[in-house]
Length: 97
Image 1: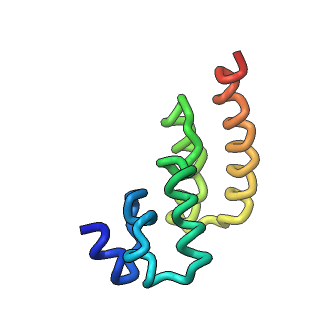
Image 2: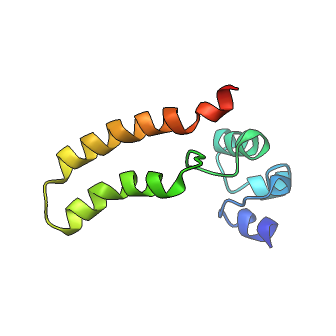
């Protein structure tokens, strides 16, 4: 199924479809090679891994709440960005040992 979809131009997540020349014809060669390498070397997640998930969600969600409440979002985003950067350093200290 992944090969059939990818042959129609819908990128697949399986490494096998990126190594099959028949499924690559729908993509520009440079994109196909980049996607193949990403499938081979990439990680299966797109967010930082954290131990304190609830705390991370609170920080990241603060600008959303401000927007919903009709408050000025820009200063909340700026503060949340700085706080989240510090949070990531603190939360990932366990990796240093």
